Length: 472
Image (cartoon, rainbow, N blue to C red; front, side):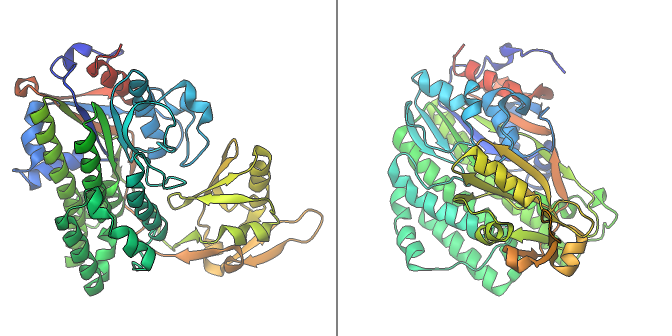
């Protein structure tokens, strides 16, 4: 691995604006190569020969998660320095390492941000063309405010579909918000795709697993509306839809990674779900490549890490926290708090003070399985914010009882329902995080292609982008 950046390789894209960064979460080269083989006439197949191609590698500490690895890309240092380790944590301490968009905005560049992880809240200073925080944002505020109607729907569905896609409730609030979507760029063809998908769900429940894919076309329409209105010199667009499909269905795309290699008809549907997810990404990449070519700019396709096969133990279900107020009451925590959005099996909370956050962790640690182990495999605090990772001990899954420890008194058994916790079942997942990602830089000169896929540090990406933007 090279010990320093060779900026000369970026000569073909340096200064060619706009630069659009398409954040294709967790997609590794193996998926790209598989997809191009399946779709030899795809947009990806066409742009790869005329692009600079790298393999990024992250050296973040601990278990890899996108809410840490993307800040590494954006801020140019690993999580040992930026210390961003969970969704919706307090980011005040990370101000020493500002993200790319903040640096560029303060330099006077027109900047647009759409969905990039850990981008909440909307900045109060800087020169932004548009700013739509990530899909786990604490509130639906956006800039301009007209895009908040999309964010309301986005956050509501993220909360509703957490872990398991549920029935879509067409209440008055959703209908009222949906009627505003055409005014912020959502196309009729996208509404048709959404309606077709929901109809397929009613006919075949297996299609529910594809519902997260529908978020990407909706968000992309809104992104393009904001982009075309404001013409930023630098912009980002984040999508997680391929990552979710890979987590569920890696084994059905690459059965050779597992013992079972003979796939059934249902298995074929699952492998085609990953293909359908990549089709959506490919169509978006094609449109962005066309835009940047017309404007004389460049397109950067990134994943902050990748996925690979994972062999998991037998699956007996898992636990999900549905009612944080019940949990707090059961453990005797009586201070105000807010439960923020997170991704199963993580749960995030925000308190009025660091002392309250610390007390909450101490009280939740009194919940034990029948072997005396904590119910939480992760408990992190950053200022007034807390992240808990809920385990899945078999004794609790079987009995649906949890032991609550008491000081100076006999311990008690509590039913899951009394804690606001339920037992759920879903695809256990056969793909998981690994440190190598993709970097595809499609510039203005076809002759500039370099398919070497040289390994570079993911923490270098920020400097590479700033160099391409002609920022020292």
